[in-house]
Length: 224
Length: 224
DNA sequence: GTCCCGCGTTAGGAATCCGTGAGGATTCCC
DNA sequence: GGGAATCCTCACGGATTCCTAACGCGGGAC
Image (tube, each protein chain N blue to C red):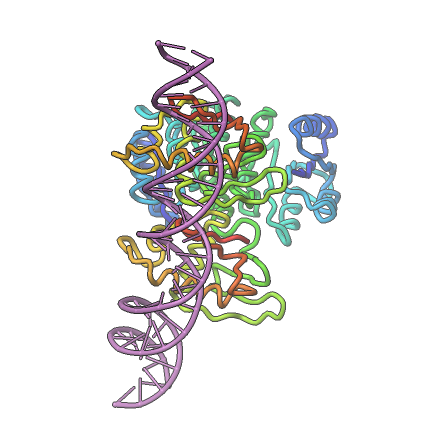
């Protein structure tokens, strides 16, 4: 669990870093807005703790910038307790807002709450479509009607996970190749192959797919 | 969006109910812990706003009971601001903790934040015009009235994206050719062709376009 | 009013992309 | 060392998409 900690007050930064580290979190620190955004891009943290009162890029701008490409939970700390500031930060995409002074225990509890909420799939850990139930955490896919489980090879599983990660979204071949076979993969010969495998195992009628759709010339789309 | 509101203070209960209703939420009220749990089971609310200081079943017990079978977001309000109480509520499964006094705006903003985080569909921003809804992130265009999705070819999609990028602005043919077919393209034969395709698929009456307008001798304009 | 250029529309061939099958290479387990 | 499973390469038919060319129509300039 990696946490990005952004605060311009070096004392607070240091204290929080020690506290978080003591609870087993890996901490990446930033002391101004621009650095925070840069670290968010580079380090892919699982959560962000952000002080609003920073020089350079303001905290609000950091929220906006990060929300442009990430859905990671953002916990805001601020010295200001007026309602308008809270509303603005939350509506820009922050997940929680704590006013100073606050106790370390409270911060930790709020981090746990956010982690719990965003860690596993929100409503049910299983993704359902048609007669299929896919449990991403347990790496198990089973037929709902009779409970029989279906065997997937590692590559098939990676491809399925990549598709299920963005239901309804179109994924280009480049994106899928990147997710499944690693960056720099260009050949799309085997993508078609494994898509056919997935359909054979998961579609009610593999010759007329309804969940794993292909968009000619663009990519593939998973439709629950 | 249905909200279960649990508070023993009838004044606050009434005030919050009016406020939430004014913002379009459907409100189910309960004035003690046992009733709150019962209502949670019966009404299947999408979110719960819970006052900790209730007679009968305590707020903490309500959290525990509800968390036994539901993952609905729980927002706790409380008169007590001590850290231990917050930690306990959050660790029992609450998602947020607000101390009295608080403003209605803050509560609403926190509800929106929770809704956004737990909403099954992280609704990406869509461009709306006429009966059409274009989701740029998902690469999907669908009819609002019946939800049916419309198939676009890659070139059609690129052209649509180029037009939607500057709503209301005039785009010269040179600009569109640059965006869609790459720099250095000069022939305008196929631009007319694909514009006609777009209109056929997206305009209510393709022969009398209202959203994809032609400016004779200049270029094209997208009008939402 | 007439001419000319620009725009909308249609049709058809060329190029590209996708689905599928067979077969060889590699890895893993027994 | 043998066998099975998995992964990748290659080739082919079918479907979709892209582009070229040609024909009317209408608006604007003179």
